[in-house]
Image (cartoon, rainbow, N blue to C red; front, side):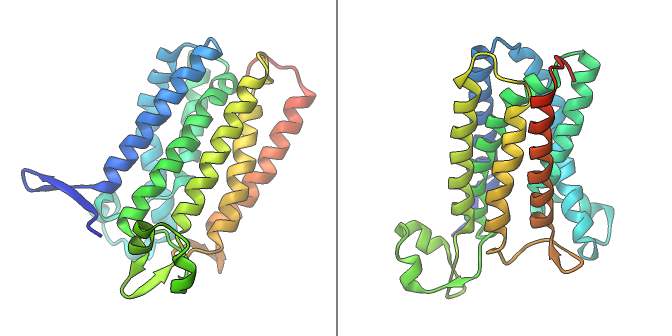
Length: 256
């Protein structure tokens, strides 16, 4: 499988970047629809995106480098993301922090806006996992030909690496993320006046549950003190999501 889609003036354009871009566009379209449904200013969301998106890229890279520092020997190594090395947890954390600061500066309700944004985020994650497929990365351990034969032929071919078939964990997470997206959209639109922050809490819990179990199958996990970093962060996400929802249900604050 060739991870390069085409070249422009000798510069390779990789499928990973194309698919990530498609995920972002799909996310912004969904967010536009949801913002209209919830009577929120989409221009404000665009302003926030122009700030938080590049910060999320930096956060995703720094998070990865922090746990793989032994493989980076210069500043150029750190900033050269074309060779891979990004972690979605770092990106989401950076985006939420910068988004909160933006909301405080603009004096808008952070939770109300972030609830409209998170279904788009998880949709982008669902699409983005196919970039991992094109790179033949983020897969699980070896599986038998009998096991992989249950998947479509193109998945079988993509997961045949150096003569060995591997768990298509990218596919598991993509499907899970899509289901989470549908659940969050349903909850958001079910009630006209849903409590602000419920969707953010739901995202933290549901995404983290799926990521925790799927991460256990992967062979490329970032590690910290012998433990899988993504699983530890997922457990923390579940706990914080539960705490957030409990707090929301106990308070009637209109702004945060």
